[in-house]
Length: 320
Image 1 (cartoon, rainbow, N blue to C red):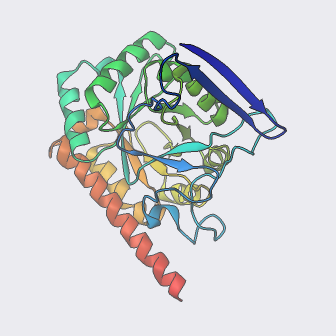
Image 2 (image 1 turned 60 degrees about the vertical axis):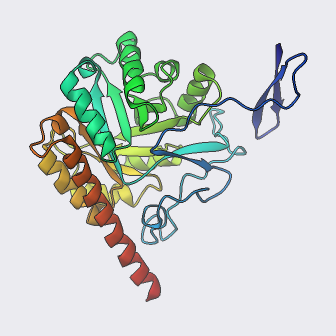
């Protein structure tokens, strides 16, 4: 077989098409793509609405974003930035409410943590992030990501807290990167260039301030994590609420380092903060007195309750 890469360029778009010729085969070969894991949805960025809305309380909150409906990022193939980046036609989105579990590369072979992760995923956690104390050790991240991918299969989204090329090579769903890193679309293009075609890769950004959250959202991040003042505290409610008002994508409160009880409290506070999810370390879930499954279920239940309350309040305001 032979393949030809054809690039179509205009003043506002760049498109790439690979034509594969296989002698003796049908001209209509089915496309090959990766399985879409649970916890991720595809959306058409050429529209201002999700192709499959997750829930109205997440994506349509009239009080926020200057009284506009909360929808997914609306980058299109016609948009471009001053540095020449361009958005993908199809974009992925984190399903909400979301419990995002961080796993250190050093702990991937720990049986207790592996069981805790399995139980939490079984209870509904759908996002897993592999990280490393030595972020520059790409080999360690790659190895850990491969092991986690084999463990969770398509039951959850797997993100790599590191370089995009490592994430793509490990066939992860995407990356979790700092707000000060490369622009989101550059990261997404790197994922595509290394990993090839398949489900559009997720780019989740860690943000320190509401300003960072707003910038990340404007630049096309699929979700944002608002960090706390330290590794053992989440951002104050008022800061989370301000960040919520400035983004249209899923907002996760960072509770890593806090106890499960404290994390549940932060999830409960989503009634006023508007957070769509929460992050937690697998170590905290493994040590939870109620067990990892019950801990994850409690987090999700509080987030779901908060979303329902917000939806009711917004419906009442619309009727007035």
